[in-house]
Image (cartoon, rainbow over all chains, first blue to last red):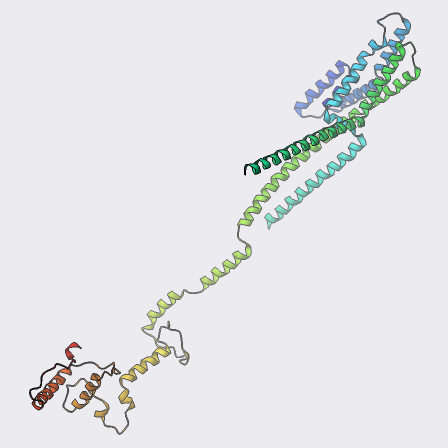
Length: 152
Length: 292
């Protein structure tokens, strides 16, 4: 599933890059549906949900640990080879982790978003919706009052 | 004067320095607060903490492996941290939904705020317009006054009509003559009528005040007739009274009787000249009737 929040999408792509073909397919479906103002059909929704579950599975089994163990296996296999060093082989992992940290540090909105738990955000959104509903009710009552005055 | 001004300048400059200092202190403190807030925000971000822990654990593991002393505990720890990191990464879908909802909420709130501002502006304008209008009570009061004025007939019109009618009418029989009315009645007022009666009576005062047995000649002197010999003494009396300076009878009209008086005086003078022979004429008689 392609995330709409840019910062979150970048972090996800950095830590667990989705295969290019899958991502392109999802973007293409989205681009085709958006101009027509249509909601995606159930089959596509199902496939996208399947894709989401697939990405969830892939993210759960990240590529970092297998890569580290493979590097360690290489070192064990040929310890005298100077190119087989865990420091150099884990460099891309460190780089990705650092770039993710930089993204979080630089984006204030993202930082704010991730600083609260999902439950806290749910409560906040409920409260916010109540406030908006209250404002709407005020405007509605005002509208009714004006209507009554006009009929009088 | 100049010392005072310098003193003021110094005091102002010191105040400005104080304010600058306080501003710099406040900005520094704000920066510190921002930094603290940022660090607090980052410490609250679960995935950031997981990444940091991942980095530390990986660094320790790499170090241990490169020293040929691999630590299995660190490897297990790294697996746990990795699991946590990607678990929190899975929650990004929920965070993305939350972000979308928040954006929608912000959009709705902004729309409602702009709408509310517009409504408040319109209501404010209406309030101003209503305040500029006169009050309902005042309008009703003025309306009542206008209606009352319309129901009344204009007094000038009424008087004009009455003056036309007055030529052919008399005092109404129901009018109470005892009461003294205002002067602008179409008929003369009671006091005016009385005054007129008195004036008429004063003209015929002797007729009205004469005694029943009194002769008519004495009571009523006839002024229109020519002066007779019988009336001469009376007129002489009047003239003498006039010569004495008594001006109580203002209504008496001079009818040229001074010529008679001149004749009499001439006769008397002749008599006096005969009596007082050769007396010098001193011209002491200052009375000249022609001057009247």
